[in-house]
Image (tube, rainbow, N blue to C red):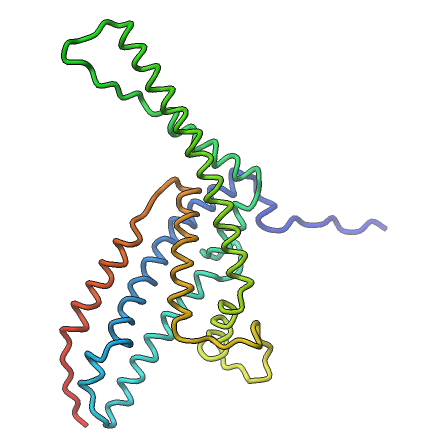
Length: 262
């Protein structure tokens, strides 16, 4: 009796071209998700780790609600941050999902070739001399410019391969790290679910601490930046985005005045 044929797992069942298409779409979306988490993180820094508002709330019944506000804000950030690391599945826009899509020599080779073609196909930019030049000199200048673009394309293709492999290595290390697993345990146990102490933990010997969220966010930015460069050929000013988010948060929270009624 013949056994049932083995079904290919996702994303191995997809062609390299389809894997690239999905990876590009999910990478563009996860950039937006990450920008939202950055904004929430900077808002929480101004709210939770500054006494600007806390010193306006005296010991009172109302203080319980202020504490609830702070707790809710921190929990929301933790949920959204951990969502960036949801396990690899077709319907997830997460770092492990994107890393799985491009974790193939065939996929990485196609992406590198695409990067190289981009630079090779760019029209040659030759600045004409004020004194003018004949056609032969012009053609020579264009030939040199094309050769320079082609050489640059080879270097960029090599960089794309480096970024993709580096992102995968970093993603694997984070997923196996007890510090990350403790954050997921905290999210699962105290926020996403009501788990008993008997429930299995991913990092039984480690407890999440304040500051672990900043650590994971910083690594998420580095990994998504590499994926964005390697897959979409796009750079992003993450430092600038963080500064903008920080300025907006401070402008809001530092301008808030509280009047506690009791």
